[in-house]
Each structure stands twice: as structure tokens, then as C-alpha cells.
Image (cartoon, rainbow, N blue to C red):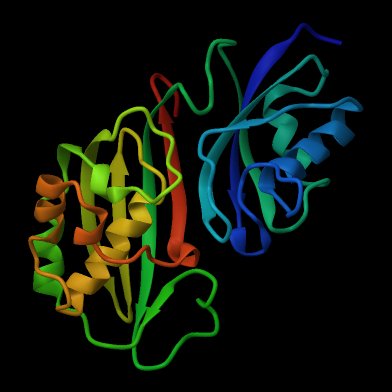
Length: 251
């Protein structure tokens, strides 16, 4: 046995059949699957702390989670071990030893999310779990105009769903960009932190702007009023993917 050390995992998962990241009494969670696999690998209980408590149906390419262990498995070999024990809709893609003071959630300096929209007359089969479906044309100009007001430091009070527990609603968005890929629209948003359902509310509002059901200055009006009703509905969870979580000095 080696001395205790902290390992930071990078995880990828298809959130379709999960009730979210966080362990729950009734419902399958990503956290539980990872902890179960670690328990089998180390033959003792292991607690895992995730960077983001993704909701049911939300996916991840770059979720991060830390755990402490004294097991003799080399730091970089954890993905090989875990992937023999995890179900096929969860995979560890990287592991690295970090300072014991690093916390997967509270030490994060930024996150990036993507939201995918399938925009065509008929729904898709392959993307049904990974993109929101919008059958009507979207106005690209109005959507891009709306997104222009998001980057910067703002009070995002209107951009959180009921049940959020954040102590402050002030956040900094580094970037908000929209790409048109054939029949798909891909919204990418990065920032220092995000409120509960914030990205899905941004996506839902952007769709309403594109459908000309909300004005292009909807985000600006919401900043001024702080009123959730100034924005559109929360977009479906299936379109959202956590792409990356950043930490100072780590890649």
C-alpha cells in the first residue's frame, strides 16, 4: 500500500438512463456507478466528489471528480481499471494525481457546456437523446444578436430554475457562440460558474428568439428585471453536454 493521495478523474457519460450525477435513494446515478467500480477495484468504500451535479438526461464529455485512496494502482492506470468495471454508458478517460487541497467542485475555475438543437422538419433517430428537436425555421441573425449580450460579468438572477441554492447569482461568462452545422445548431457557453439550469434556460430562450417569439434583447431585459418570466422555457436536458471543467495549473 502507498500513502493516501488524491486522484482527479475525467469522466465521459451518456446521461440518458441516469437520474443525474448525484447519488439518490431511488434512481440510478453516475456517482453511484463510479463509487461502486472504485469499491470493487480497491476492495473498500470510496467516496467520489463531482465537479458538476448534472441533471437527469444531461451528458458529459469532461466531467471531473476526485477521490482519495491509498491503493497501489498507478495514478495513470485508473481509467484502465475502472473501465473494466463500469457500465458501457460511463467511461473514465483520464486520471491524474493532484494536490490534496484540490476540490473537484470548489476548486474549478471554469466550465464549458454545449447545447445541441436539431432543426429540421422531422425528428431524428440517432440524435433523439442528444439534441433538442425544433421543426420550425430559426432566425440566425436574431439569435446571434441575442447572444452578443451574454459575455461578461452580470447578475444572472433570472437565469436559474427554482430550487437553486447559490449564495450569489453574479457570474462571468467568458464566451457564448453559436455554430450552424447542417441541420444542427450548436450553442457553446463557457464561464466561471453556472446557476441551476442556467445553460438550459439560455438555450430555451435562444430557441424562442430564433422562432421570433421573444425579442433579440430578451437577455438584456432579463438582466435589468431579474425576472425569470422574461426568458424562455428551460430547454430539454437531452441537448446539454458538460464539455470541460478547468482548474488553475491543470490540463
